Each structure stands twice: as structure tokens, then as C-alpha cells.
Image 1 (tube, rainbow, N blue to C red):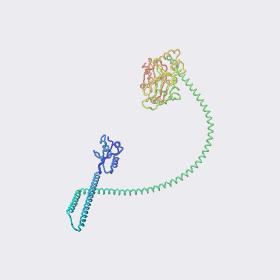
Image 2 (image 1 turned 180 degrees about the vertical axis):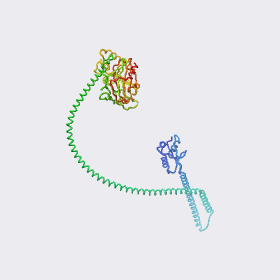
Image 3 (image 1 turned 45 degrees about the vertical axis):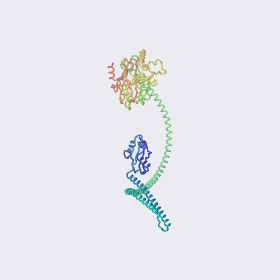
Image 4 (image 1 turned 45 degrees about the horizontal axis):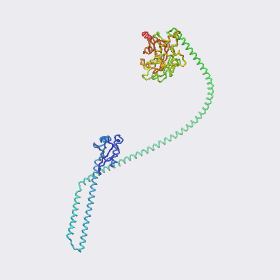
Length: 588
């Protein structure tokens, strides 16, 4: 694309080519307009802006798009040349001016030549006359013209005639038609000048009309200003009256304030007397508060002792006839959630039966790598069935749900091999167990090996779920079961939680839904977990990595509050529904 713009102009004084200071890139970027280019051309060539048009070799340039087209058609590289073509009337006027100047020069030259030749002829005649007079004086009035003098005079006369003929030829060379054309063109120019004068007079008339209108507007504005002054004066009078009213109101308020201050002093005196009476009452209330605290502590102690006694009596009375191989009857099964084996965000109700999760990670469905929403029962679950095909069962009720994004899931429920005390003592609350829930997931949890500093070697090999009630003489049977458990699930130095796909979307749970969880251990290894919602079996999952039934003691109910599941209540001492028991008998 070209970078420079040139103006080509042909006027009276000849052709000119002037370079523009505006670059082509400024026109392409629309930084300069056609008006800027036209104005610069007029300034550079010293012509009026309204007397010419810009053209290129393809036509007239009327707008910015035509100017861009001319720059584009100039080629690359190269210069964009714009012809400055004056209007026809201006061209004709300039031509007439040019011709008039040429004629004036020719007439002046001819007049100068004629003036010089006449003076020369007169000088020669005067010289000849002087010579003749001199000769006449010499001859004292005698006429004695010699032949030479006569010849000289004839030659001079002939030269005068020749000069006159030359002058006539030069006068004949003057074109009278051109002079007539010039006169007609001068008339046309005079007519144009008259039109311009009429336009100027029209502008003067319009100016007078606008001046008259402006004068009338000014008069109306002055009248409006006077009306506004009167209006403002009335407003000021009203404001002065309002100021006087406000002063009176302010005086009244001051008097009322003084009366209120007197009342306030009287009230302060009464308040000081009341404060003295309250101080004495507070001292008496502190004594009553201490007494009430002591009564509360004693009541809680009595209630706790009575609850434990009732629980022991219930276990001993209800389960004294239960006899499993390796275990003695009278095991204390779970009654509520454990008070300390829980996540840091979990809040328990006064009776420890309802757990509420407050964690932000668990609310988004994230339960791996943290203990948010963790709830553990305070004891093991009962075992139902036969030694080779026994099951554990517990139920919860949805007490509160929360809104969560789709796919977040709900709570997780299942069982753990460790007891609540073992999970509580672990620094990260890890356990070995199996859970279902969330967004159709199943969790396989493995705990890292942790030994309490004050633990004895015998305590390490025997989990709490085996130690809840080992029958006398069955220690060897329990030891074999523990060895089998260690082989099936060897200890890990680092805990982990794996999730696999399952079939129960816990996010679909609603308020007051009852969820039953049954976990059955197989004789040859592996386990099956079934979920029943409101008595209807909803999902089932097989855990192939679970140890054999003989290697497992009692199982501890575990729950993870997550997603939509915010709060749940545990129900102790319940048996599996008849539908689940029928399925178990069919499988056996």
C-alpha cells in the first residue's frame, strides 16, 4: 500500500505537485477524514476549499470510502496522486484572467513601441527642420536645396512610412473577437458578482430577522427574570416567617428539655436506689445459682447411674440366653451415638440419639480424607442367624435434610470392625469397615495401625469387638479368629478409603424416612450389605474383600453425614424386617 499522498494542481501559473503531510495509514485507520485532506490541499495550494474537487484516475472522490479506494488502487509500493480539479466557472474565470493578463501585456508592449517610434520620428523631423533652418540662414533666405539633402529627406519620409505600416500591421494582429469574448465573460463574471451580492443581501436580511427575534427573546427573558425575582422575594418572605416560627418552637423545646433534665435527675436518683436493691438481689441469686449447679450435677450423676443400670439390666435380661461360639452372653449392645467417637463438626442431642453434621466438606459429598460427619454407636450391634451365616442390623431415621447440588449424594451407613473407643482413640478416627450411600457409592475403609502408648502386648492382638465378652475356655477359638482376620485384612501403615459404584442413591432420601442396614458375613469370605427404606429393600452390594464370618466378632454401626443427609436418629434393639429375613433364609 502507498504511504504518501500528493496533490496535483494545474492553475494560472502552471502545474504544481505538492506532498501532503497526512499519511495513507492515517486514512486507512480513519484517524484523518476527507475534510482534513481537503483542508490541507486548500492550504498547500492557496486556493479556496469550496472551488475544487479531488479526483483520481478512476473518478471523483466524494467521501472517505472513495479516498480509501484511491489509496488502495494506487498500488504497492507507490504514491497516491490526487488531482485538484477546480469547478468549471473557476477554470473559466482563471482562463479569462490569464488571457486578460496576456492582452494587457501585449497592449502595454505595443503602446511602448508606438511611443518610442513617434518620439524617434519627431526627433528626426526636428533635426531636419533645424538643418533646413541653418541652411536657410546661411543662404540669407535663398533656397538652395542640394540633391543630397533632398534624398536624405526622402529616405527619412520613407522610413516614417515603413514604421507606420508596421504599426498598422501590429494593430491588425489584435483579435477583436477575443476582446468581445472577454467583454462577454466579464459580463458573466459581473452577473455572478451580482448573484453573490444578492446572497450577501439575503444573509443581511436573515441576520436582521434573527437579530429581531433574538431581541424579542431577550426581552421575554428579562420579563421572566423579573417574574422570578418577584417569586423569590415571596419565598424569602415565607422563609422569614418560617424562621420566626422555628425560633418560637426552638424556645419551647429548650424549655421542655430543661424540664426533661429535671425529670432525668429524679429518675437517676430512683435508679441508684433500684441498683442498690438489685445488687443485694444478685448476691442472693449467685448463692441460688451455686446451689442449683450442685443440684444439677447430682441429678445428672443419678440419671447416668440409673441409665447405665437400666441398660445393664436390659442386656442381661434380654440377651442372657444368647450364646455364640467364643462369646459369653450378656453383651452390652448399642443404645445411642457415642459421645466422643465422632467428627469435629457433629453435634449430638441431649439424649445422644440424634446426630447433626455441620461440616462444609461433607456437605459437598467429600468424606474421604477427613472425619466430617462421622458418627459411631456406643456399642456393637446384635448378631442374627447362624455362626456361618450371621448378620448385624440397625436402623436410622432422617431427622433433617439440606439442599445440595445434583450428584452430591447423601449420607453413608454401614459397619466397622473396631469399637467406638478404638475409633475415638485413633488420632484420625480411622476404622476398618464398609459403607453405602452418597451418590450411588460404596466405601471400603481401612485404618492405619495405631498402638496406644500405654497399651499392653495382649491388647494389641485382641480387638475390642472380640473383647466385649469372651466366654471362659474359648480364648483359643477367639485367637484363631483374630489370626484369620489378620490374614484376611493385614494391618496397614497408612489408612485409605476406596469408593466403588453401587446402586443406592442416598440423595433421594426424604424427611422421616426409616433406613435399615443389614450386613451379612459369609462363611467363605465376603459380605453382603442390604439397604431397606421404610421396610422396602432398595439396594444390595457385595463386598468381596470382607473377611470370613468366623474371623469377625461383633460389628459397630457407623454413619457419615454428607450431602443432603444433615441429621439422623439411631434406633437400638430392632430386628431386621421379615422381608429381609425371608431373603436371608432363601439364600441359606
